[in-house]
Image (cartoon, rainbow, N blue to C red; front, side):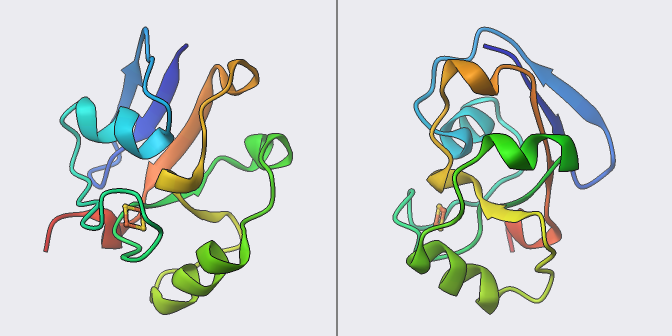
Length: 106
Ligand code: FES
């Protein structure tokens, strides 16, 4: 699987041969600047990403806990998601996301 991640400096990074179970793990394992403080429990919002508009329809809507955590961030947009809650399946090959400012280590 292939993913495209735009980092906080607006650089697009292509991740190839991704086998991680979630988007957060794929980003973190690639060494990009994502904090993911809670390790994927949907309780920190430091894995916040913006999903490319064309990919939104491919994702399940956020669960209640994810929606509540996104509300905590200052930079929420209609395409905001917690990357730890996005399970990587074959139909997401080519998914493109942008790291939110709040996902960077603080
Ligand atoms: S890693 Fe903490 S909410 Fe995703």
